[in-house]
Length: 113
Length: 113
Image (cartoon, rainbow over all chains, first blue to last red; front, side):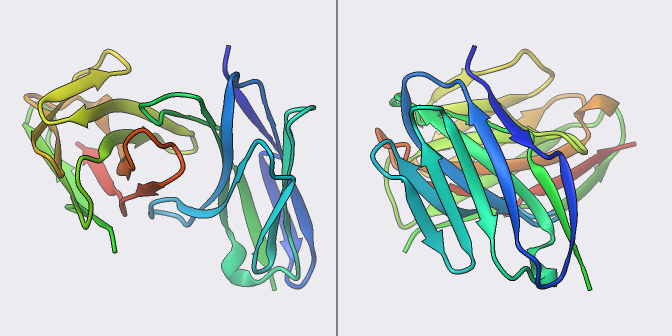
């Protein structure tokens, strides 16, 4: 069964600290993996997208890694800011012409001053 | 550039009333279009997707229906709303035949009372 599991479910950190969010998937065949940031009451916004051959991709203070062998990905946030408080969703796309995605449940991050 | 518009942003409807949520995409042609629902504290659930005008695929049995009367217009409807239809509804589009470009709308918060 195609699944995407994220951990932790929620996380609280102090402003300025770093954190790492985890994503494990069992989707096969695999096309690409994305990380989205979703602010409360808003639509998800893409942070990074990685295909099978990519191991790491950065977007400002966000760095995503992908290990296609172990089917694991992580999202590292450096020097967190209050505006980083949001839900972070790992999404995996299998090889499909419809572009259907498999969504993780998300990690809710709260950055406190 | 491509943009996706979704409205209304919030909606409060009584049980048994009809529903119509609209989503339009600009700046592209022949997109794949999607409707998702996100219950409180839950992940995104794909409800419908469409690969062309008049072509609708339903992912889960439910009280809702979707239609695509024009290439860049996707409508989510219900004849009689249930309390369980409450949630956050998101429209999304992707470049057809590619899972790489996937953009979400800003969402509609539906509360059925």
